[in-house]
Length: 177
Image 1: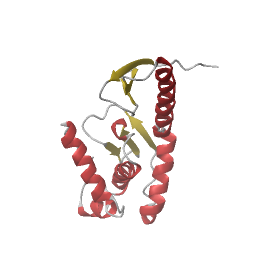
Image 2 (image 1 turned 120 degrees about the vertical axis):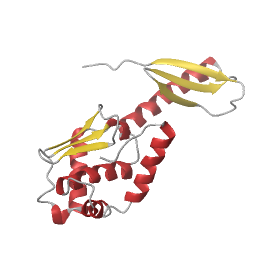
Image 3 (image 1 turned 90 degrees about the horizontal axis):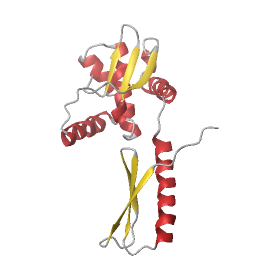
């Protein structure tokens, strides 16, 4: 049975912090922010509690290729049912080498790749990106017919705005395809 290693924990005490405790990952390390007045026992208790919360959060957001394929099938059934004969991807997977786009599709072989950068984004944003790529299996270009298919997703404009905001905030120039 494989044991998971405990992460390196850095505790930062703050005189300005009164009651709240928070934690975040910084690379391989976990930083826990606590009030300066906490005793060593309280510090230990809160570090354990925050590690458990962080692990639970990371488990909730961990997304797999299988989950992504199942999501693609649900989106196809709901928004592209009349095109279902054309929308049968050969594979749908998360990739880490998409630095200039949120997702991509190769209609000739039916492969869809979704950037790992969106794994922690809201579900409705992931659904938009995935539906965008599924629509390329029907219409390879960004023609009006393509955008009409994408517009079937009720949150498409909201998701596009969200992604544009992320691009602007991070300074990344990421495209739609």
